[in-house]
Image 1 (cartoon, rainbow, N blue to C red):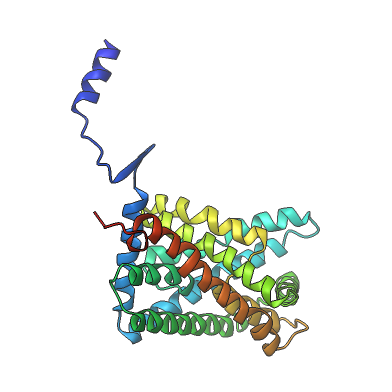
Image 2 (cartoon, rainbow, N blue to C red):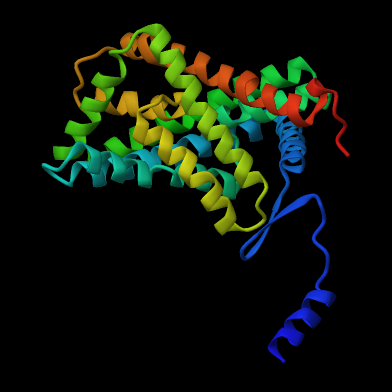
Length: 286
């Protein structure tokens, strides 16, 4: 009788469209659908008025800063533990930054390097719109990061183990060569864009959380470099007494990492998926 009931239910169950992948507990858009959804989202981002784009970017900068402060505060409080444990905790907490940004629909430069490039490849925007969005979003991310830093310094919490770890992070982030930083920037944003891509295909918060969490956690634990995170982490370390200058952080980290992030989003990720599912590969949307 049970077998008959199961067969009867399966016979009346609605068919799942080919445009989605079935998952336990729900459905997820197929990669081609996700690609074109992300491209359309990138086009929409470029149409946001400049003041709104700046505010949206500033909120993203603040959310990244919140995650960085949380990660440093908790990881530094572990005391004398294995470096692997500290990395695991830091990397496990940091992805809340992308989750908050995705849930709020805010603009993040690193994700936009892929989304807006995809929109450009699909003919949805022109180059001027792409460049304008990247510049305005980056400026907003920077403004939010610096504003958060100044407010955080007023709390009196940048002390003890938190300050020590913050200073150490900044000192470590300016030691690599220019090309090493570029490549670390490529790897970091490749994973961030993958997280955005997977989250784009999910319709509920839990799905978006799972999609975003693991790629971001991976880049943090490995030690790759993310320009927007560094817009907060590096000044935080300077404020905590790191043996470095503002120019050190800009020339030895921010510039090469930003270049790497752009290459990852616009070429490695956006270009590859446009070739697989979009105009660069001669494919139509439908």
